Image 1: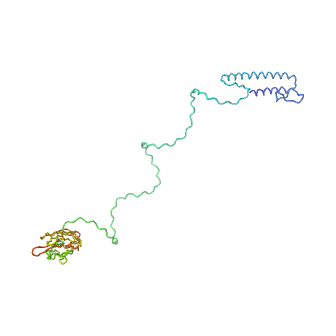
Image 2: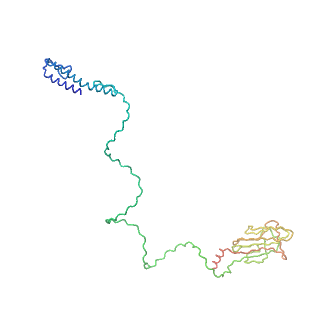
Image 3: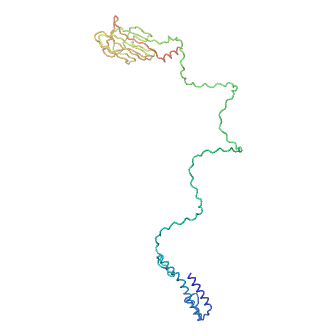
Length: 338
């Protein structure tokens, strides 16, 4: 503002100087470089008076401002600073002052803009079914859909007339054997001739037979079916089934070690010691025989053949018979006779 005032005063002086006619080349004024130096002596006093008044006005203008700053600096405790003085180096920032008291609430501002949409929330539970709405009007008929699957077979119609008999096909393979049917009622038994019979009882006429060889019982007491051979001393099985065998042997003068043999294998063995008197050794067993099996008696130890026979008062016997025949054999036998 001071600079603008000086320029205005300098402009006024220049306007007054325009009326002066220069006698020599113009020189720039010492105090006002924008004007030429004044040459008229009548105007010199006027100009110097104007300058004095100008200085007084500037002084009166600046004095109140300087005093106001001096007083204001004293109040705040800061160093005084005049307007005309050059600015110094900026000082360090002071400590923050205490927080002031909360001011009154301001006016309510305008509503802010809407925020962005939030994330999609989790699916809620299924709600209750709403009230059934009214039935809408029937829509237009749509295009024909694809053909659906075949429905269930309907009830059969009445049988038609029988067609002509076709030509016979090739004979098929035999089927599996069926299960055995229930047992039929018993018929009248007329199969006495089909009952298998086998029994024998033999004696001996000689004493002390050879060891480890079939003993030949040569005295025939009974032989149903003729299945015992007196020449070999062996019984030969004709019907498969269960058989019973026994022996009763009189011994004298020697010990007796005798056994029942089936196809070369001992089934039973017995031993009787000689006590100085006549004694009887016996044994029996039940075995299963197949057709062509052979059974006999023999001495199984050396010099232990004390078998004794005397037609006048002592016998030694070998006996056997069929208890019952094998059921499968009987069924096959019945089929053969049928």
